Image 1 (spheres, rainbow, N blue to C red):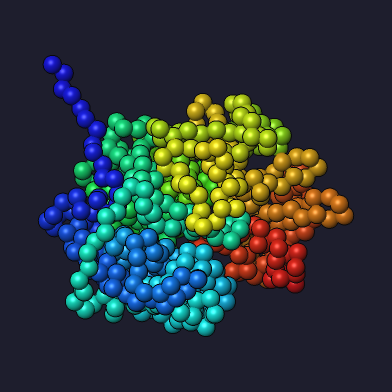
Image 2: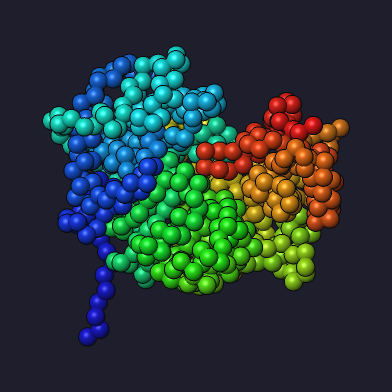
Length: 578
């Protein structure tokens, strides 16, 4: 008789997952703190501390806010997390979850000198989330306390994790938490609008994370989780890729991880590879810019001390993926044992928890070369010409999930025809928290309307850009990231700090290019950028803005804010060099 195989029985909620994780010291989370101190928490210690923090939150007295009475927090109430220390964030998030509360992760990185827009955005999120409680660290308390100066947030309760969770925990009875309960609110990055609270339920989280982190054989596009896997990540935990991919998802499938701060990576990018080498990491993930940065900075001397042979998954997502970047990274790191088949491009949205499609694991990255003229007409026609555009395949949807590509009228389009990407399945959430207008715009007839443009070719999804960012000049479509990548290769332009957009001028849509660079290079860059855009795209830039370093606005997750850049340009607020 042939042996039978059974699929694993997964927990139905994050809280159940935490309860089911094994005891003992062998498995858990390892943290590198902002002060480079290493802290290890076995799962059992994480459970104990989560229960303690749940008790503190559950006994907290709050003031009346947002038209809601004060008093102790109830199941389903929101708790805002502004915690730059990863271990404090994870333990407090789990504490809120165990208590039946709804964590709201928020970017904690503003300094006291740069507070205006940050506090405005923070207050907007607190009001939108109806959060009466904010948990921060001592190092960002001074900034967080500025909330007390705003009328809409003056009564918010501010807790300092290092201080307010230290005493003996009060009595607290855990509520029952089910699959349909809210797990957390993931506020969108705000690259095209004000941040909206994506309401993720426990069932959405379990469906998504088991689909891409489940063991081998369950899904051709999954990571095939194995007992000896170790995740290594510097990704910010207020963003879905770091939070779900390396905290919540790994807890659900019992995958130990090592987390170190995003700011530490920014100061010392090579530490990412050094930690993978030291701890024999098997799974990591990063946006395109990080692979680009390491491909540029790693030296021959660095290669001699690195061993990346243990790394079987090097995922890429969260921003447009450039084929050349990943190819250069794989080539540069090959002497350190890096396998190019570990590269795993993917596509996702917060509204689908995290992931929507994954490249087929263990296979070579797929690069589609297409005719640029045909792409301007919305058709991905294969081309071997020197000027062909290179697009990276982001893989296939998960079992039980569906993709569709539709035109402006919502009708499906054919193979290799560009349209808006739609998704549906158990990972897709029900909408935005207390925002029926935004929900109605993005969720229709069971489908999530992503706002992203793409096409399907032989089952694989290829991403072209955002529908609202599409530049249409003389009837031809141009995708802003294509222009931005080409301009970013010009010497003197801060790579990754280029924005392309269009404005109306004399009744016509015209192109504007904005790039960061030094004032001494401004005159040359204006000329070279205009020439490169003309040569590569046949476009005449109506204006080339060379801006001061840091002048171009970005979201908290590092994405270009094209809409805001355009508004700043039109109002004269963009800081251009003379």
